[in-house]
Image (cartoon, rainbow over all chains, first blue to last red; front, side, top):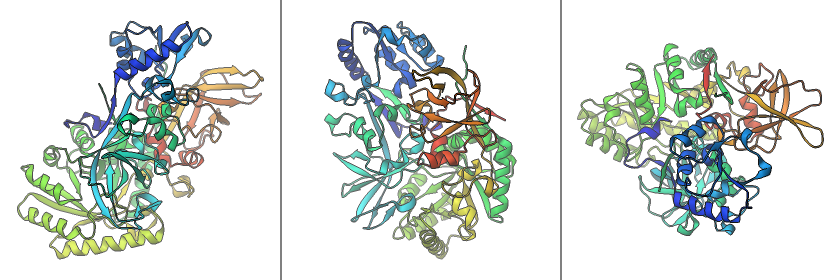
Length: 250
Length: 357
């Protein structure tokens, strides 16, 4: 929790949220919604995107209410000067509303499995710093239980995100993260605070940046692709990201 | 009007009991209590104070912000605070000044210490990689790391406190290989002039089970909180007690079209509940188990009720605990959801209020 309070030039764990993309997605979805009361679902602190900041960014859109999880979120939205009411589940009337869900962040859900097909872009880029690197030989076990073994001499980068940040322990089963222009496999079990990335023969140094997911157009895995490799929806992934990841807005 | 949607109960008596059990188990080796990630979701300051009051002199903090927040909270010398996840862009000077013990894997990190111009020597624990392949110097780089540390020790820039490693707990044989590599690294350090370093290798499972893994100090995280590994002996059978209970009031009871009833609690996947839990987990209401059923929502979970379930809105649902109210333990939760209990507790939202009992 306290790591977010450090005075780094850039924090080591970052979720950068593009509010322009959220606004753009909201216009696409509002245009497609039936002509009824429009409610935007910002539960779970806007699925990890920050309910107050997202509500403020959409305060001029044609939205009738925001749905939030608790009083704290409702207060935070009001305190940021937003006039659109923030309501909770007991005040909502599902029959009379069009509820816009986490697809507004470019995330898949059970009801919207392919947000990109609707022209919706992912708003969040999740990235973290390489803390250290290590050259290892072929057939070396990596991380707890040695469930991953290197197939050839390679370089491992230790990235400062772990399961306490909401990165599943089992992300090694198919999870890939972006580094220096291409994606690479998560090597071995994700630990509580770090995971290892097998970057092959790419030169890598402490301080370099790894992107777990973001906009596919920039070569990053999409949040949907990342979540699919975990057997989850992207909405579940972003909503359970920890507070040590510093949110910032562009 | 704020009705808590759930609460975390922390039994500090159980925590102190566990520390006493672990201290007796590994004596004469010392115990380090690991408090990373807000003490595994149990509360950094409360857990650290309880550990210090129990006579623990080593606290494992993970990183410098956590270590410095403990010093700021009054956890002062001679209590040792160990931090080993160092950010290459981080200024080490405040930690050196606060007498935080630093886990060091590279010559570059030693050079950063030298450049920080601290007034007092930095206390360093030199790390060897014995197979886990995360950080720690490789056997090839080890003599160079030790030699550079010795140089800086002679200049009064560092004090070499310890030699340490972390093992994979892959199986007993692999762990024995790591122990042998560790002993080789200690011998090399001694040959290069390191005098009587503390040696530490084991975390909870190996430290509890293997006397040859304990050396001078054992780093206990999970076991302090009464969280044993999955598919092994229970906490109770090891003499440990689970410290955390998670509970929530029933927020709604509704009848489904087919006549069955279900109850909700206002905790969902954004609060840290596992999406694998519905269908695999049962929670306790008034001493009776009821299954969690899907869908797990962002801020709500559903519980199936029997025809004869006599429950009402506001009744307490025990999600997990030590089993004394009929609920499943965190070990059982971990096994049922294909993970470890540690993942379940550290992913809980800090928004859920925590109360000491």
